[in-house]
Image (cartoon, rainbow, N blue to C red):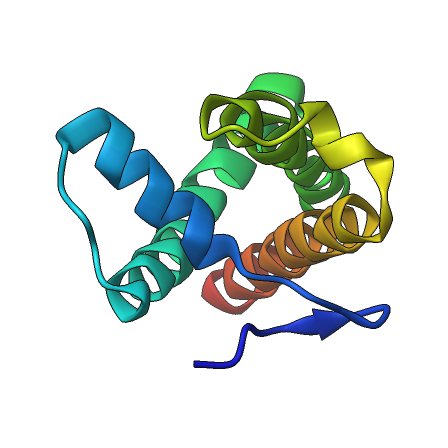
Length: 123
């Protein structure tokens, strides 16, 4: 299966991190497709909850809360979890890490924007 998405010429494969963490934490080997699905689900639900919590705690605007959330979640993925599975810290700040930064921060900002739109619509 091809690794997606492609940012800045780097094929991101976040499912590999999920699969490796599953092996280390649970002792089970998840199929790649399940790792990918879990990453997407965590990205949608987990990022949304985290953006909302950052917004509530900081009182920053939702898009800015998204940017801050994305920064934190990027650091967790690249700085904390990647080394757990044997990768270097922040994966040596190469193109993969930079693309991951854009993905995490961009996704969280879009989620913040979507939450703001939903709030306006509900008001």
